[in-house]
Every structure is written in C-alpha cells, then in structure tokens.
Amino acid sequence: MSEKFDVIVIGAGAAGLMCAAEAGKRGRRVLVIDHAKKPGRKILISGGGRCNFTNNDVAASNYLCQNPHFVKSALSQYTNWDFISMVYKYEIDFEERDHGQLFCLDSAKDIVNMLLEECKMPNVEQRYRCDVHSIEKTETGFKLHANADHLECDSLVVATGGLSMPKLGATPFGYKVAEQFGLPIIPTTAGLVPFTLHKQDKEDFSELSGIAIPTEITAQDGTLFKEALLFTHRGLSGPAVLQISSFWKAGQAVSINLVPQTDVMELLEESRENHPNQSLKNTLAKALPKRLVEVLIERKEFEDKPLKQFNQKQLQEIAHHLENWSIAPNGTEGYRTAEVTLGGVDTDYLSSKTMECKKVPGLYFIGEVMDVTGWLGGYNFQWCWSSGFVAGQWA
Ligand code: FDA
Image (cartoon, rainbow, N blue to C red; front, side):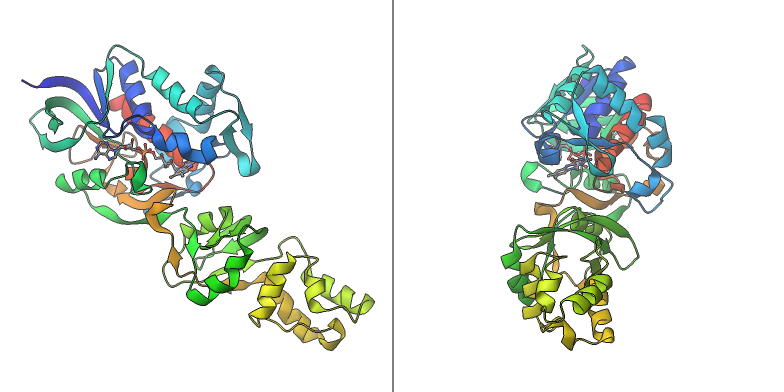
C-alpha cells in the first residue's frame, strides 16, 4: 500500500520550504522529505548566523546562468519586496549592510521559523531522516521508495541544493534525478569560495593572515567587484575573492587594484618633492598596511630606496603595479567551504515561468540544484524564494 500526495518536495532547504508553503496554500496535499535531521541547515549558518536573506536591488544581472534571461520571470513573479513583506509580517528585525544586503538583526533562526510557520497547515507534512531510494514515473505522476515507505505523487519537486558543504548534507541527488529523466547537467564547480595559492605565494602572504584591504578585483572576462580582500593562512578570501571566484577559471590570473582609494602617483610625486629622503616603503605604508608593503618588497616586486632615487617612469611603474597587481591562484578551497555550486540542471529544459521540466510534466527543479548562481549578497536565497514560489503555484 502506498501513501498518496499531490506534491512531494525533496529537500527542506530554502527553496523546498518556500515551495511547500505555497503549494499548501493552494490546498495541495504536500509532503516534504529530507535526509537531514532538521530543516534549513544552510539558512541557519548563512550570513554568519544572521542570514543575508535578500538584497534591496535584485536584477537578472546578479545571476550566472547559461541562459541569462531564464531568471527574469521567477524574479518578477516573486520579488525581493515580496519576501521583505513577509519578513515584516513576522516582525523579524533586519538591517541593511553594504551593497543593499539585508541581514537578520537577531538570528537566521527567525527565517527558518518563519518558513516553518508558513508550512503549518494540516495538508503539509514534513519527514526528516528520510532517504529516497528510487523514483519511478507513472502514467499520472511519480512513485517513490523512501526509507521503508512507498509514496506516490502527481508532482515531484527536487529542491536538494548543490554540492557545497557536504558536511551539512549536500549531495548530488538532484543531478542524478535530472539524469534519470534525461536532463543534462551543466558541469558543476565551487562558487563564492576562497582562493588557494601556489607554494611560494602562500609562504609569502600567509604571515598577512587576518589583514583586510579595500580592493577592486577583476576577472579575465572583465567582471569587476569593489570589495574587501582578506589574506588568510590558506590563501585569499573576503567578499572580493568570493565574488570573483565565480567568474574565475583554473589557470587564470586575477587583477587587483590594491589602492582603489588612493591616487598613488600623486602620493609618490608629492612625497618625493616634499620628503625626498623618505623611503618608498614608508611612503606606500600611508596607503597600504605596512606588512603588505614589506612583503611586496621582500618579493622584489619593487625596490625600497629613498624616493629621490626614483625617476618619473619608475614611479609610474610602481603606481601601475599596485593598481593592476596580478596573482594566479592555485585553485579554490572547493566545495568544503564554497557557499554555492556553479552549474547544475540545464535551464533550457525547464520552464522559466514554472520551473517544470518541459519534457517531464509534473517534475520540477528549484533553488541551487539548477544552473542558476547568484552573486554574494542575498541573491542566492532570493533565487530560492522566487523559484520555490513559482513552482508552488503550479506543482
Ligand atoms: P539547500 O542546500 O539549502 O537545501 C537542500 C536540502 O536538501 C537540504 O536540507 C539537504 O539536507 C536536502 N538533501 C540533499 N540531498 C538529499 C537527499 N539525497 N535526500 C533527501 N534530502 C536531501 N546565500 C544567500 O543568499 N545569503 C547568505 O547569507 C548565504 N550564506 C551562506 C553561507 C554559507 C556558509 C553557505 C554554505 C551558503 C550560503 N548561502 C547564502 C547560499 C545559500 O545557503 C544556498 O544558495 C541555499 O541554501 C540553497 O538553497 P536550496 O534550498 O536550493 O538548497
């Protein structure tokens, strides 16, 4: 004997809970299943425990996807303002940080509790520690074998997320379901992730661990972010690096303006005129942390001597070097620490209005499992809310 539901949602993360609540509001009998012990684990650790749940300014250009237009419909059907209204309704205090990022003031738990409250309906059930062993297509829907249960549903929603943070329960389950039903997967890699460095660079810079500086960082495709860079004992991190990592390809260098807030040429020329005996090191230490300047000198990126010994061309070369400092990362820290997974279920095979598979009626993919990746700044959760919402209207 199998239990029958209208909708089964696999994955009780941001996207899955949003979709379950919406389908439940339509009176659908919904079952949410997850192999984890409890819901929304990534939400709980997100944003340093405060969950950057959306952004004041959300556009399709904040997303990476093979089809850059795909996200537009869902983002307009359920906007950042719709989610912010719900946050207001639940009286969750929040604050705006740099670049329009909205964070809970108290705890990310508020967001999980809000979603669970939205799912509180007699027709929405949740089961945890539940493993799906098989999925079969039937004439009218799907049959699932999960734990020892035989389940049936008309609509199946896959919301199992990407590969980042396997210790939080991330699995390639969603990609396998996609493959089972003939949907291609855009190759996946870690995104929003710190860079590791080649041996010599790592040795040189590891002593700067903990130092953060404002930068402008540019990938080889020209994408530029104005954010802070953080030196770590493993390599480079901070928002600048996380952002650019999603645009970086193995073997490429990134270009970094280490002094975006200073006109270095002016600083060097003025200092040479007024303090000709001042060393280059002490001059640059006015624009950069002194230890960083020392490391750059130790690496022979430029020579330390009194300013009067530099001619104009040499000063220009130093300024240009600092404004276009280039470093080729060795790699990234990978899925272990990545915030997201780039690539995923090919959106060409999904309806942008409903998230339903074009060739498999009743099968939906939502959230991070799809080939949709947001920038750092609340955009990934917004994609979960928007894609979960639209699937919830149709599933
Ligand atoms: P998500 O991964 O959240 O949920 C998938 C669910 O499916 C999980 O509950 C999992 O247990 C379950 N599952 C997986 N395989 C299964 C299987 N085989 N069987 C049953 N269940 C299965 N984004 C943002 O916008 N703002 C932020 O502040 C942050 N901060 C942040 C910090 C850190 C440390 C990380 C790792 C990530 C972020 N993110 C973020 C990204 C954001 O967390 C992420 O994009 C969403 O959680 C994705 O939501 P989904 O619902 O798609 O998957």
